Amino acid sequence: MTTRHYISFRDIAKEEYEFIFQRAAHLKESRRQGHYLFPLLGGRSVGLIFNKSSTRTRVSFETAINELGGHPVVLSTSDTQMARGEAPAHTAKVLSRYLAAVAIRTYEDQELYDLAAAATIPIINALTNQRHPCQVLADVFTLLENLDNEPLEAQEVAFIGDGHNMANTWLEAAATFGFGLRVATPPGYEPDSEIFKMATAANPKVKLFSAPKEAVAGARCVNTDVFASMGQEAETAKRLQDFQGFQVNKELMALASPKAIFLHCLPAHLGEEVTAEVLDGPASRVFEEAENRLHAQKALLEFLTRP
Image 1 (cartoon, one colour):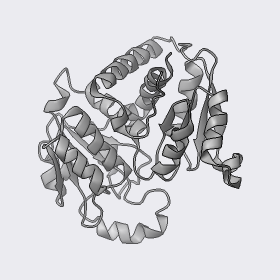
Image 2 (cartoon, one colour):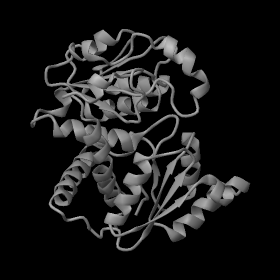
Image 3 (cartoon, helix red, strand yellow):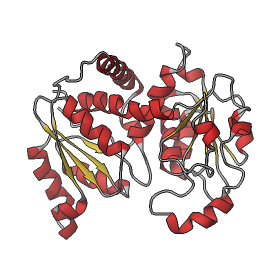
Image 4 (cartoon, one colour):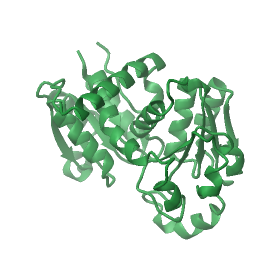
């Protein structure tokens, strides 16, 4: 059986996502009714490697693994021999003999591809500088929960802010599902050009804007993220200047659909990319979105590790 990895959102096909979302909904409802343990991992262990700090990713993955009847093995790169120069292929071959899968939160996609090239277990992208597929998996699931059976491909989604890993992954999701996506960024902060080219070739409803108002107009879902991500703290002052006019506030949300929901992967910098009035307002689904990391990742782990 071919080992499946989840480094890019495009690593899973549309019809496979339908299975994952159905399972996530079932696992969420079962948990709501007090049924926490689904021993789908059967006592197997899953590695979690964190080279970047984390709250939601770490807690949701550890909880998911435990509730699937598995055991999380949490490491940072400094805890492994990779920090001393061990070849990624050697690490991957060894971990494959111990674990059912490995999720990694790190810097470059290439680190995951290097491990995946030699691994015989799934390698899962828990965040890189280029992509954040587990987050957008939960985001799309959250959007589906709020559509009242309206077709996903008929929706318009807006992403406002930095064209970084979240914007890139929303582009991949739009290419997969066919919904409209409008990304608004200041000049110089556009998404990855190759990912954008792929997305527009797959889906003509993907558009890039320089004005947030144009991107948000009529949107069913409005997304943003911090203007300065981890590792960019030294650029904060410049970025706050460059991103003036890109704040998601009450006035901007008023241009979206009356049914619009607001999403943010968190943590948020209130008063910068979003106001407290929006984050804590009636359109916000940010805490449901954060909870859905748990359910979506449970379903993902089941999908990737099943015999």
